[in-house]
Length: 16
Image (tube, rainbow, N blue to C red; front, side):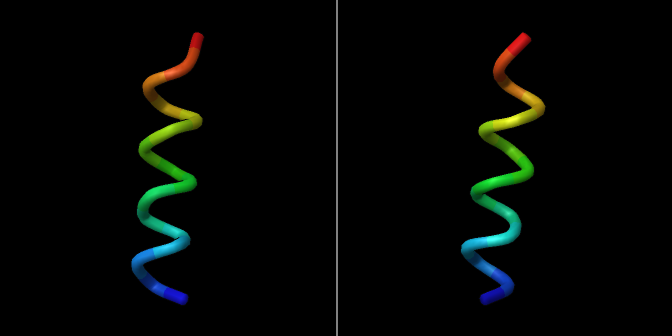
């Protein structure tokens, strides 16, 4: 769950 959240956050942050 934590890893998924971190990945999701990173992806959202990476995307404009």
